[in-house]
Structures are given as structure tokens and as C-alpha cells.
Image (cartoon, rainbow, N blue to C red; front, side, top):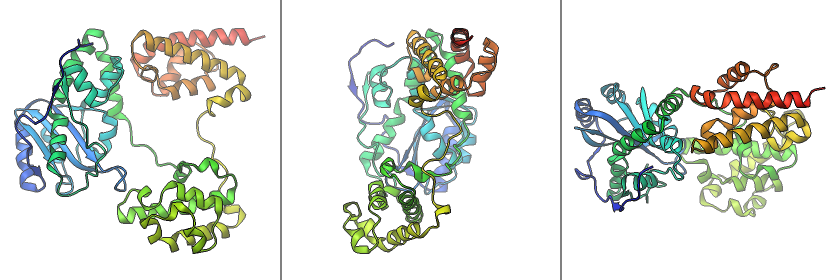
Length: 408
């Protein structure tokens, strides 16, 4: 870890706030600059989560030695594939890469090699790994973080927002360099490289078959007819939100959907009496909401949703003791081992071995418990080689011991 130091505020980008690039000519100039630059490329993206439908980028920031900083408007420049090609051989430095990679890939920017400063911080055992905290702890500089939740679809973007955005990549490469050294000194550099490669290689998530089931508060809805109201309202809201390019919660809050499902209003007056329907956007679509409730009420029984849909994995761990006591013992033993290993290597438990892999292994272990079978199963479940080298043998040993203890 780095020693404590005096903290200095980072108030202005070294070369000032660059102009926002929003046309082909400006992008060509950025591409030329970054192609001529050297070393890693710091990259960040700003979205409008909570304001707009989806998670597209509304500003992309980059910095490279010899190239300076660039701020690119992906609305005016929706194709960054030329920039991607210009830095194809460079290491791309991101913070919390899994958040930014999807929206960067949407505009044609697809890193081949990556360094994730947040993930590096986790592997090194930093207690707090937000960018501002890491910059302060590692570099002794204080970043202002006042605009992270702003509506980045705003045009024109205010100057103080642009300053914040430029500062986000100002010292990202310097942070990377220190963390790279710490990873090397601690023997964790190869572990980090495997983790970075795994993040880059993770395919986009498969869309959920019933996304409406994630409505906040749906656990209060106890019967299938009311669940049908949730489904119909959620589907109508999603359609309207997509058409208006608004975050669904700005069209109608989840609390309104659940309240309508519980009360089953039959008239517009009854709907307006539900407090969660008093927002301007909700009132604008009252006829749509009432029609959705009516559709759910008129569905034949065989078209009603079931209370829940079985997943492809094991049940929630709090049910294991009743459903399979032996599996519950395996899970407790494996979790304790992984926690001890994580503590020994100074990192969060979930970074030493993915919790889902531990659950799936212990719910359905290999028919014959050996180092080889446990290693193979964990590898199938996405464990990296460094994780297998630390965890596979002790987990196999513990599972084999429990098997013998539970045998005849």
C-alpha cells in the first residue's frame, strides 16, 4: 500500500478544458492525435442513467501521453471505430470497466487489452475503490465528484460538468502506473491480467425472459391476477419509455405499478386516487394504465403468470438447510474456506472466487470429489486459473471430508 500523504485538490485539467468534439472533422483530428500519442489510453464514459432509456454514452473522455485530453460527444460522433483502430495496440485504462464497456462498444470502441483501476484496487485489498477515493489514497490528489449522477444527455453540457469529465481521465494513467507496481510487488499482476481478460471476454448478458419480475416491491403481490397487472403495466411503461427515450421510472414509478396491482382499480377516478399516479408523466398516460389493468383483469386463467419462474441455478441459500442439509453443510464449509483465503490474500471474498460458482459447485458437486473434478467444475463455472490454484484443492479436500463424514 502507498504511504499517507498530503492531499491536494485537483481543480483544473493541465491543458484546460478541451472543446467537445461533435463532428467528423473534429473526430478526425482526435484520431490523428491519439494515433501519434504513446503509452496507455485513459478512457471514461458518462451516461444518463435514471434520465434516459437504456445506458448509452453521452460523453466519452480520453487522455494519452502526447495527445492530451479529448471530450467526444457520441451523439454527434456515433461511430468511434476509427479512434478504436488508432489505439488498437494500446492498453486501455478504465475504472470499473464493466460499467463502461457496454456503452463504449455500442459506439465501436472495443479494447483488446485493458487495465481496470477499480479491479486492481480490489485485488490489492483497498477498502474503498471509488475513483475519487483511489486517486486520493494512491496519488494524494482530490477529485471533485459532484456530477456523477447528472443528466449527461443535457445539451449544451455546462462548463463545470466538462471540467469534472476531463479530470476523470486526467490522472488515470498515473493511478494505473502505481497500482501496476503494487500488483507486481505483491505477486498479483498475473492474477489481475487474468481478471482484466475475463472482463473483456464476458459476453453481453442474455435478456431476462420476465424482466417485469424485477419490479421493486413485487414481493407484496400475492396472487396471479395481481401479478398479471404488474406484467401489463410494466410492459406498457417500457413501451412508452422507449418511445420517449426516458428512464422507465420517470414515466411511472415501480411503486405505482405495485399499488395498482394490489388495488386493481376499475375506473380512472380510482386510478387517480392512488398517490403514486399523481406525477405529471403518470397522469399523461392514464388511459394507457387503465387499459393495461383491464387487459390483466380479462385474461383467461391459463394466460396468467405463475407466482415465480424457476431459475437455472440452485435455490436461495436460506432454503438449503430444509431442502438439502448436506448441500447446506458443503456451502458453509466452502464459504468459510474462501473467506479465509480472501483474508489471507487481502481481497474481498467475491474477488477470490465468484459466489455463484461456490453455490453451484456445492449444490451439485461432481459425482467423485477429487482435485481434478472440482478444478474442472469450477473452471466450467468461470473461475480463473489463479483462483483455481488457490481455492480448488482446499475446497475439494473439504468436500471429500464431508462426504466421508456423511457416508455409511
